[in-house]
Image (cartoon, rainbow, N blue to C red; front, side):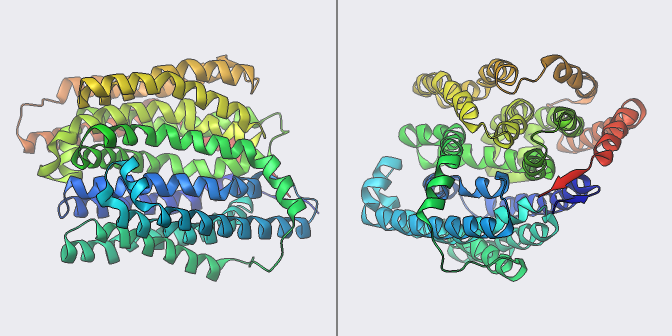
Length: 485
């Protein structure tokens, strides 16, 4: 029997937002402390390990986590069977891949940048096994819009680096503190999920169910691998040409930017896939999508502009004086991510929810085929040429976005462009403020004071000129009801 839950979107956004903002506030604080204890080289080693771990996890999950969120089940029994098949498949595949990594650790480490990383790669890869345990329960919680429970998981897990990793870093002074901290974080997630979950695995398996799920999830798997490529191929290129110092400088800076942007986007993103999956046949889907995205743009655009102009100050605050070279990476990546969220991250959820991830995979594949040669070429010229070329690749993504949403989602481009107008004006007003007030050759005190002034003036502009439009979008979302199955 279908159950209609009033205000499910805003309640989910509320708890998702609290969880993600809480986690994303704690993570940068941990990174700020760790960046003052450890060297960029240490973060470079962890980036190389994570590059392998996240790649392997996409393969072992095989898209089953997304299947649990998106699929329509005829009853609870069918959903339980699918959840058990997903759970045991993920664990078995994780164990096989981890054994393969351990048996070939030297060859893999050499491929990723240096044979000396063999031991740490094997230890770090044990995360795969723990990740496989929690994947299905996370999918079920998202499917059922139980973001209040996910809030508890996210915040408790985010506290691990402060409680475990920072003390270890002070004691060990090496990247092993980061490795142990990451493993402990996933272990804590598993314990809390099993405490909060109403679903527990049982000894059940069906090859018929596995084949049905895999046929559904194959394109989601391809899309996941392509998405991994988009966010990790640059790290692989740097690891092949430059030292671990530059790997750490680049990846830690970009990860921090994504974490800060994630404080905003992750408020909506986990909810968006679940909502759009339930609304896949609803004619108002596009309208709800536009209103949710507009709220994000009103926050993201002005914040991105301020971060770009005050990138030196932001880098000093986030990483300390030893990371001053990272300022330009922070600046250009903030601008790139500001645009990418709007034309890639959020629309990607629409492709997944509509059950057409193969077109999202095609989008990603074309983007990579255009961008990778540019990045390989510029990396041979110099590190900074590579950084700027990577960020400028957003222009390719923009062209592909307009083509794909028109061709495969059948969305009219005009409402999307109209949706951009007022948030863009808000961003332009902040650009004007920064040009008027910001001076890079002034003292640190003036930089901080002018930054605070720009922020306060931005809040004033948003309240005076854009408040009604923001409230209208919030009202439209609150009015929408979602049918849960």
